[in-house]
Length: 139
Image (tube, rainbow, N blue to C red; front, side):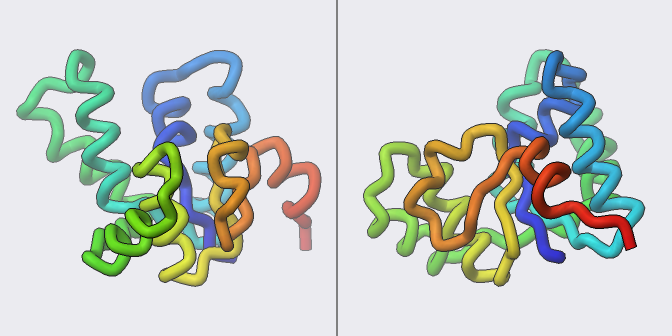
């Protein structure tokens, strides 16, 4: 399964944000330990660095990138993604970019805690809880 992971899920784990940490950590583990392929947009990494700029020193950014890329595939940000997102005319441009990227890589789901902003997405957005309740199966 191909999962595009939104930045709020990664930030939950990196910042140990309660009460979301545990389910977001489980999503991260799913991408590491199972056949699921976890993807993040290059824009997501930039967002993470920006949001965590007070927690991550400039000289630690490369270690953060190494950690994330060990577990997730980083999807390039293309002009196609930006153009498609602009034409979506969503309220949140970053979410539109995530949606267009998910569509381009043929993701099965976008994993986010912010599903309401993805209601018009062609790729269904679900929360970590929904993933484990409705999608996750043990073989």
